[in-house]
Length: 203
Image (cartoon, rainbow, N blue to C red; front, top):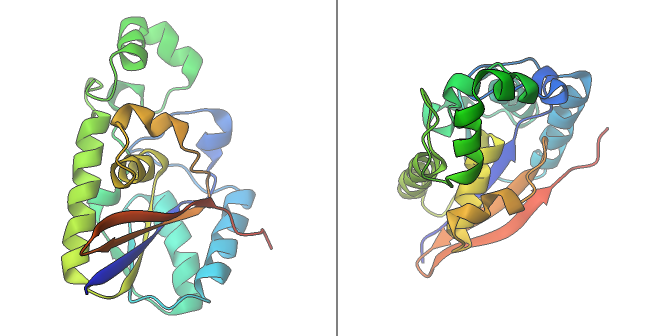
């Protein structure tokens, strides 16, 4: 029976995370805590046997993946499909700035559900479609193997609610912290979630 296991990692904390700035496809450096989270993830994953290390091509994910690769020896394979949701006109702004500059778009974002496409960006439905397609492709590429993928909060939540058979509207109910890992398994009987938001102890 073919079985592929995915350990899906959220990158460490960034400077924009702590300032409340929406990152999306823009980037921000890891904080000191974020680097400690990446090192803790690396120490945890060094005890796991896995075949491939994938990462979003955004810097905060790549920097997290580099800490993992430094201990495990894996090559980092970047894949833009693992990027965070593109937040369009909201990117680079904090909450107050979004309210001031785009009040109607913010209202729609908060009320119209997962099919709302942020101007210049993506809907959560589009995010879910690309992460599920990516996982299914990697499932075919790595049969009977374990794969680590470093990604982002909304992307991971979208994949988890799909695996759990939950409506996409529920994605905000899942906690996926910076520096955490979640585990999904795909086999002939379907897709299962094994762990969610497992946060290794900081060194």
